[in-house]
Image (tube, rainbow, N blue to C red; front, top):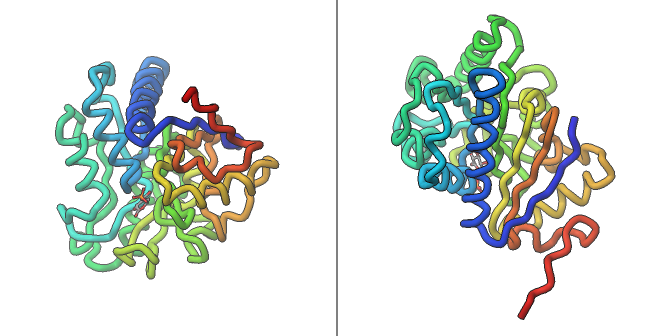
Length: 268
Ligand SMILES: O=C1O[C@H](COP(=O)(O)O)[C@@H](O)[C@H](O)[C@H]1O
């Protein structure tokens, strides 16, 4: 597992644009190397900001959209089209504007659909879909994700793995139902840390002053190369096999220890 590396940008708009440029390059490189690319999307303000910036980038058509697989790291378990669903927001921010192959877009199940209000069944179905894409139905395998994006919540949650809830302790299943989430809606579906940790690259997005304490808590605790305590700070357990990248803005980096980040002196 790779140790976290940090990149701090001046503000959240610049962070979104730089992350979008980085994602375009990563997808283009993966497509050149392997024929297709696989990206796991996140919800939340920073994830949607990145997608909007990608949509506005003149370089966006360097991506062959028809050879891109899209998955989600978590979903708010709500009906199809609900404005609070992560996939609804991603479609509005970018996906409706680019020529994706619908068969390669893998939203998590909706509430009131095939699984009714059964979030456990929805989680199991998504695990099956992942296993099938990995060529092993019925197993716990997940495909190799090139880049897995995670927004970091002010409480250090990533995907829908919240501090103290059972999902963050899952060691076997790649997808779980989450109940009683402290952030609405209470019922969610989420990839687990073992699934997240299969990705080649994991990028954690944290912009805004409300993320400063979370970033400092996690990055100070993992500075020694350890995993910290994912049960109380889930973002600490989110690592990529080849790269773990924290993309921050200056406001989110404001409480980091000096050993990790020293803001450039102002030129006045
Ligand atoms: O509810 C969620 O929140 C997190 C973080 O969102 P933010 O708005 O504080 O950046 C997000 O990563 C997750 O996907 C989403 O379901």
